Length: 279
Image 1 (tube, rainbow, N blue to C red):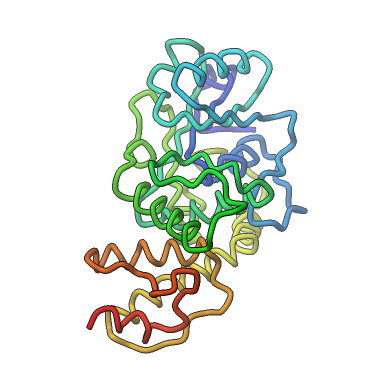
Image 2 (image 1 turned 180 degrees about the vertical axis):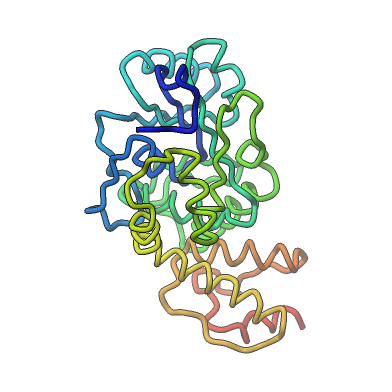
């Protein structure tokens, strides 16, 4: 197997540092040439447990302490460092792959994160002052609003997901996985240039991600319809996450508008209802 690293780096543990939802498990499968093609789910949390561990941290010191103890026994470590990788190489000898996310593709990442945590909706690790930590008794409007705040926070306030770190050995662009085949292959080659059948891998990714890709097309079509004052019906299967992201995207264009109906527990069924807020 060949990676785009030096021979020295191949003898080190490889740390994949990525924001929640930014394909860390998928990248670990590519890195080890161990693609689980039987997994047809959107989330890629089906990597063999022997090759990676996922590290979720509360603070910088916990990150550094835990990852130092994990490195000796793990070939690949998946981490959400929340910007702490600058101190990592002071503690351990490792190769760092950092995944960066452009603000224009945050909606893909949020969808991935939700799917990965579908069975544990209390476990949400994006920290904002607007966070609703316990969903069980929350009203629909408050959950929707929480997702809207997450979108805004990730897009406007949180720089660690967007900026390559000087200590990273390889920078992977999350966005390129979703743009087109050529850019997808480019990122794959930078992780593992000996991966088996790249076209099969690309088609597999497109298949597993189809529902997210279709959703994002709807997001953009709704925003475009509002901007052009066109009246269209909204899909009936939009989730609270979808509604929250669309609200955030609308706020990007019309920040003075509060994108909700008088009865907050129901949501728009058409752009006609949205356009009335612009009158």
